Amino acid sequence: MTTTLRRAAHRHRPLMLFVSAMAVLAVVSAIGVFADPRVLTGAPIWLKPLKFCVSFVLYGTTLAWMLSLLPRRSRTAEWAGTVIVAMGVVEMAVIVGQVLRGTTSHFNATTPLNGALFGLMGQAIVVLFTAHLVIAIVVLRQPIADRVAKYAVAWGLGLTLLGMAVAIPMVLPNQEPGIEGISGAHSVGVPDGGPGLPLLGWSTTGGDLRIGHFVGMHALQALPILAIMLGRFLGGRLDERTQARLVVVAGGSHGALTMLLTWQALRGQPLLRPDALTLAALAGLVVATAVAAGAVVARRRRPELVLAA
Image 1 (cartoon, rainbow, N blue to C red):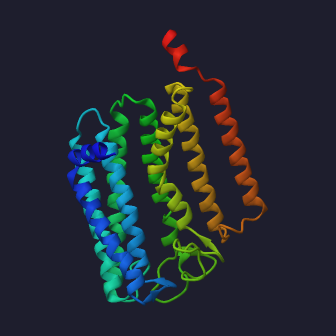
Image 2 (image 1 turned 45 degrees about the horizontal axis):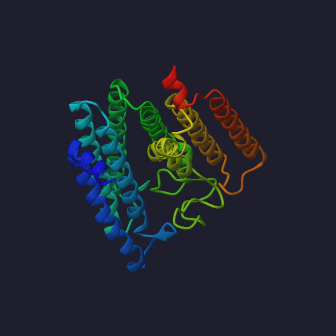
Image 3 (image 1 turned 60 degrees about the vertical axis):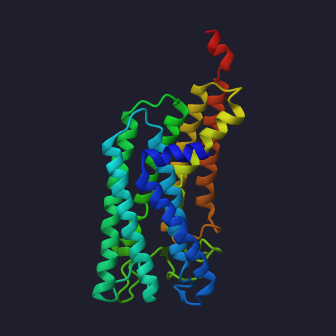
């Protein structure tokens, strides 16, 4: 792991410096959660910076690792990574700055300054999305010797874009709660700041668009972890092609789950209180994933047979 991180830091130092800064800020924010008694939209005021810091640590570390897998360096991808760092700094500067001012960073248009800061965050996310897309294209165009890793990286990068995209409904006109100065919401059918799951804060009384956003974004980590586990625990039984196909099945299932959770939220339905239609869709997804994975495994070839062939 240490060697991997060193290789990642060598390939893209700005990303890893950003990750280090976010790790330090995460500690500061965690202290603030307990030391600062202020509450904002139903949660400790430092909880949002904490969650964003942790997310950026995972995101930046994974991106740097993915860039280190490329057989040759790409200036385009490295510049895109630096742009992502710059946009991440903008996001965190606004979020922390608004906490220090005692107000919200998201959906806040209560004053010209607050509206401008929220608009700046929106523009930063668009630029970050574009830079991430550039990295995805570069990675897909370069040959990666490890086929399983290539599929995991490709699906992870693509599904992260989907995870960003499913957050768009948060700022659409139908999400405006009718409160002056508030231009969007995480929750559907209920006001933001109501009862929510511990730590995550996802609404337990209405839909919450952050759930699909979260699941989609963290495909960036989930699929590479799956690829590593397949190689470590089933590498002696499954050939590389079979492992790669299983990653493809997992990627398709992950994308479908992201859309299902977003669809559930848009219907104003809490995550833990699904109706019959949602349960039926989830059951269908589970069955389809199991059947597809079973079909892949049934067609497997043992590594020793592949070598013999």
